[in-house]
Amino acid sequence: MSQTPPAVPQEPPLSPGASLRQLLDSLSREQRRNQELLASLGFVLRSFTNLSRLLELVPLVAARLVEADGALLVPFREDGRLWRDQVHASPLQRAAELVRRLTAVPDSELPGGDRDDDGTGVEQAARLDQRVSRLLGRAEVFATSVVARGRQRGRLYVFSEREDFCWSEVHRRHVQLVADLTALALENEVLQQDMRRHERVDRQLSIGAEIQAQLVPDRCPVIEGVDLAARCRPAFEVGGDYYDFIPTRPRLQGRRRERGRWAVAVGDVMGKGVPAGLLMTLLRGMLRAGALSGHAPDRILHDLNQLAQEDLSQSHRFVTLFYADFDPLTRLLRYSNAAHNPPLLWRRRLNRVQRLDAPGLLIGLQSETDYGMESIVLEPGDVVLFYTDGVTEARGFSGERYEEDRLCRSLQVASRSGSGAQAILDQLFARLDRFVGPERELEDDASMLVFKVQEEVMLPSLPQGGPGGRVAS
Image (cartoon, rainbow, N blue to C red; front, side, top):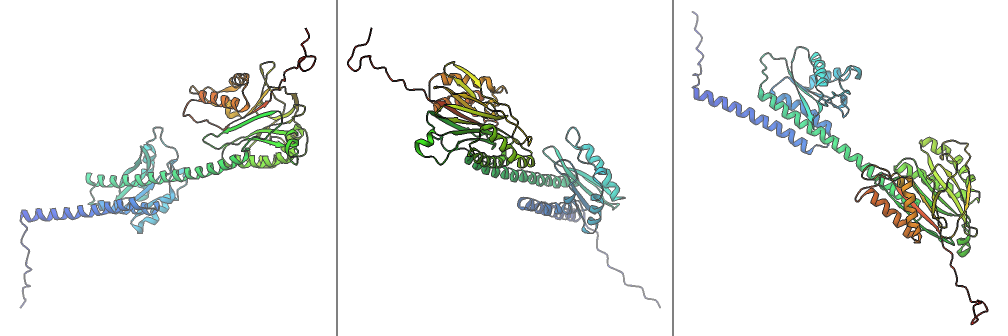
């Protein structure tokens, strides 16, 4: 006799109220879970020190928020190219193969590096979406942009192969929130890189400023019959300006040293920053050694050019340099020029400004270069102005340059007043500052050196016939 199996007790159907409470509990648990996921991502964003670790978490959170099979994050570099090292996917068992297949594609076949004209990257994103869809095969793919400050920083994909998966507006908002947090992380990384780069530049500028300060004399020497004043006005960036006073016979002391021949040099390395300062330091040593030979200025520049040829050719920089020597006993100024701004001479007797120039190429341009030499006898009251191109190339409010003609007029006005070298220098810089404008920085270093021959002291004539005598009528 067969026995009838015992009946399985069935649960009574839920009342409408109980069903509603159960649904609300489920929604509440899902909401708490989503809040915890987003809070975890926010915490990592606030405290992360490793961008890669944060980006690894993004696909995992995105997939769990919408209960999808997986997610893929494809960030872009600043130039729009695929950031291969930071492509991440979830889940782990599928991520490695997916990332490998995407990043194995050559750059020439990947979208990126050619941002749209409007900067939005819409076409770039569309081409990448097609590539990702082909890699994921039959899966449903939903994508959103990772955007910061109006620029495409990447794409975030969520995918699922389940037939019952439904992409809702709530899902879209959750994934977009993850994408926005990711964009913030990428933007922070860019800002931190910029900050580190600026810190390196600041350190270079500080080092360069120290080098440049050591190049120029801290005070002008005493040369018999000459009044000297010099100043280098640094720009925001460190340049390669240089000026120097070099005794050709440094062993002499006291009055003999003051009456000996002195060399005056003004130069500028093409370029800015620490490399320019280091090159000028090297050339300064070579030039000072050459000045001790007692050779004429043209020979000094010729030898300097040959010695510095190899160092300058490797650095792809050149140097302009004006070199002169002055004999206080004869007031003879001999000079040669390696394509530097010619100094300006104000002749007191003629009240006229003229240029002191001589033919010659840049230092470091050609190994075999001859330099011309000129000479002139300075007269009492004459003023020579040595300067660098930061003066004449300074820009005013309208963008107009200061130019040599304006500097000539300024020198004529300042020299005609009969002031000393320091007063003339102060007037020249005051005129330059007025032209540039208050609270505006110079684009390049501006150096000026005023070399004024002291005026002869005229003693009063004694009456003829000796003391107490009568002046002849």
